Length: 102
Image (cartoon, rainbow, N blue to C red; front, top):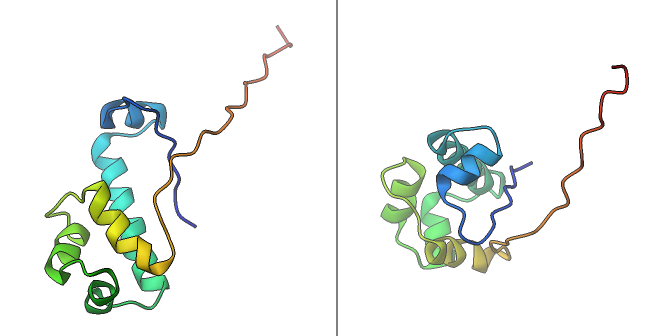
């Protein structure tokens, strides 16, 4: 299963990281790890993914090796032909129960 992070308009990577109790670097590394896992679980080589998405294989390799930060457009171009997209989804936060033992 992949990690899902809810992003609000105007959120910066630092705000998102704080929201999920992580650092921006860890958040990005987790995203890259999920991206590579997604490709492999779908039995795709970088070359095959490149052919499906029309995104250069070198660009995909650079994304996976953390040498290039993908744009939203690039991610949509990569995922779209496989039947996936990026989505911003609001979730309801559960309120913490108060400790009534006090």
